[in-house]
Each structure stands twice: as C-alpha cells, then as structure tokens.
View (cartoon, each protein chain N blue to C red):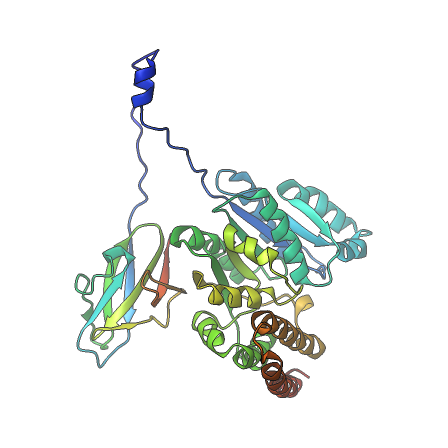
Length: 316
Length: 94
C-alpha cells in the first residue's frame, strides 16, 4: 500500500535515487543449419524440439536464429520434406536467416552478427551446429547438456565457453587438431597454444557460447571466414579473457559432414592461413617482423607437409 | 499475500581424487570460499579420496589440494580459472 499520495518538493529531494533496473541478460541461440541436408530429419527434429522449448522461454532466451545457406535451400527446395520442415518447424520456432556463405564459419559470422544486433550488454550468444546426430540416445544426452555453455558464461562471468565433444583418437577431427591445428599453433603462437591446450583439445569446436562484449570485439576484428574458434581462443588469451571448457558428451558427426582426406587437407591449410594472418596483425608493427615471419613460415610449411602426410596415411 | 521463495534443493555430489600416495587431500571451491581446511577428504580402502558435498543448482568451480598442491580433477566435466587466475575444474549441478 502506498503511504503518501502526494509528496512535497523537500520529500522528493530526500528520496533516494531510484535504482535503474538492469535487464536480465538474455541468451541468443544461433543454430547453423547443416550445409548438406541428410535424407531423414530425425536428428534435426530432435534439435528443433530443443529450439522450440527455448523459443517459448522468452524471459531467458531471445528468439532463436537459424542460419541457412542459400545453396542448401536451392538444392532442397524441390523436396516436399524440406519445404514442410522449413515451414512447420524452422520458421515457427526461429527466425531463418538466409545467407550466401563460402563456409560454415561465415554462417556463424552472419548468425552471431544478426543476434548481436538484437542483443545488449551482458547478453550471451550460443552457437549450436546443426549437423550432429542429436536424434540418437547419445545425441539426446548432448542436447540436454548444451545449455550449460551459456549458463557458465552467465554464472561464472566468463567471456568464452567452448563445448568439447569426446571423440576417438582416430576421429578425423581429432587427427586434424593433433597433427595440424596444434602443431601449427605451437609454431606461430607457442605461449598462447599452451594456454589454449590447457583448456581444450578441440580448438576448432563448433559448440560455443560468447559474451556480448567479447563478441563485439570479435565481430569488429578482421576475420577470415573460417576457423573462427581458433581466432576467438587466441584473442581471448591475448586479452586475458575468462575462458571455460565444458564437455558436452560423446557424439559423432553425421556421415554427410565427415571429413574426406581432401577436406582434412583443406582444413589444415585454412588453419595455417588464418594463423599467418593473425600473427601478422599482431607483429607487423615490429621493425624486424618480416624476417621473423619468413622463419616461422618456413617451419609452418614443414609442419603442414608433415600433417598432410600423416593425414594421408590415416585417412587416405 | 505472502510470496514464497522457491529454493531448489541441494544435491549430493561425490568428489573422488585418485592420489594413493598423498598424506592429506582437501576439497576447495567456490562453495567453501577456497578454504584449504574446511573440507578434508577421506581415504577409501582403494586409497582414493572421497568426499560427498551437498551443492545447490548451478556451476561450481573446484579443485583438490593434494598435500597442499592445487590439483585438477582429470575426470572433471569442465575447466576454467578461479579468481586468482589458477586453472580449476567445473562441476554442473542440475
């Protein structure tokens, strides 16, 4: 009950300033639709059951965004199953962002950028790759754990939380990271690489959550449209940001998305290119940077050749 | 009308540290303000160390102090840093 209907000017002056209420931070889910559409929809249906639940929890979650490559759309638009899934599921529980992208990482960039423009300070952005076997029992377990990533950011005041999936040592992603990504990282950024490996064995993970302020920096930073998790981890280490790693379970990629030798080679080459670009950005003001760059590039060349030989022996 | 605050119940979490040669192991974390003495672990017949702690819903940072040395749990579900910048573990409680 209000005690006073009216107040004198003096009373108003004595009244303590009204505290402005900080809005509760929201989590923005961004789903990356599989580039290569599987024939059946059980995995996507399982994923979108989660997305539907998120879309109804409006206090905690912003409306989810689904990023869909136009090439995928045009390849599938003749199929009734796709048209039905898009109309009845995708658009009902998420905003579909149709993009032309050269790579999955560019789809992330579009999706995270679009979500960022809707967000505000303290919000968290949650990237969910669509091409995993969420329909299996293991996949269901992973789906039940994914929400931990944005929650860790919010509860523990972190900037970046990487979701890690357990894989077999002979899994192609693991092989690429062991012989390619980390070997190259140790060459170009030896100190930072050790720090990153202290957190995760999967520096190219597609499961992640990122805080608004750090995403803003990452979006404004000149990015290559691939291997962005590696870049984010490096930038987080450079800036002494709060990094966490959380295991989301044991899961395997869908067969459609598994790496061939050619794809594995491309990923190693892309990682090298992006590391070179980041290194130059951080060192090009030093007077003798070009000599140092040439030395590192020569070693990097050897590392890439060795990685490709190993991958050829194991995957070829 | 009285509003009832809803408190999620505490959940018992088992912490196990495999350090058979250790003389003393304690559990430290956000939940005991990283106090090195308040949560001593008990050595089991298999020489691993066990302690059950009731924790509230959320994500908690923790580590083991094995003979005074901060030690990570190799089976932890996550890794992060504590307020001192030391690498520590994460446990989710749902």
